[in-house]
Image (cartoon, rainbow, N blue to C red; front, side):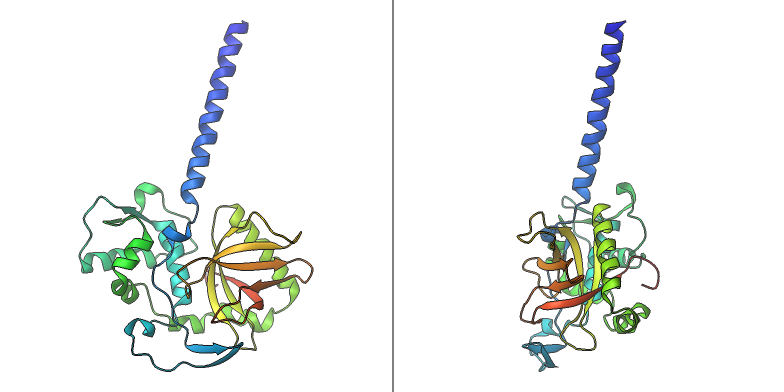
Amino acid sequence: MFGTWGKLAGVWWLSAVVVISVASASAGEAEFHFDRDTLAFANQTVFEYHEGHASLRKKSAVKRDAYNRHCFVLCRTAMQFKKFARFDPHGAPLDDASLATRVRAVTHRAAWTEPLPEDQRIVFPGYKDLREMSKERRELLQRTIGHGWPSYFRISNARMMFQPGAGYQKKTHARLNAALARGQVFIGFLTTYPRLSINHSVLIYKQKSFSPNPGVERYLVYDPNHTESPRELVWSPSTRSFSYQKDWDFIGGFVRVYQVYSKWLQ
């Protein structure tokens, strides 16, 4: 009798280990990685910024600098590829027409819907990840993933006028943590309205494990204006507010964050 129960306990233990291992592997596969899951080309700002003051940018002779107003599009595209696409580095790259068709098949899916199972995902042969493909086929992706101007007319943009308070930001912070806990990414609209020091979209994908200030939470961010490395968003519980990293295009400090692409019309 003891031997039978011992064998059953052993089988149960091994089964539990397998389940935990598979779950861990799945979670690892679903994790967002900056060097793999972001686009290699940058969005260019319409304005130039000098100590937080915006002015119209002079026309550039460099063709790639004309790719602007696409921060929302690039964040949405990164989310969609993470949910609906997979890459086959051993296959032959597609011709332009075929590749454009598959890119549209990804970007025309609603970004807020559930991820596709691995065997139903849209396959992109010849590249190991989105980062590599967007580097090699930059112009095709820029032409195909969508226009930037509709982001100015998003219905949800009105929240910056009607829900500006710390209470709403506290709720946004809770939604951010909940999304990351589920293994999802969080796309945020950053604004300092009515000022024009920032009017931008970023993709928040991970909470940093260490913060030098107790209670302060720091997050890693894919900023489409900066393809070289992640940026940092910070939540302060004492002020119930977010702040964003200083850079050439933002003076740094206080921002309001509004979630986008988590549901229809958002």
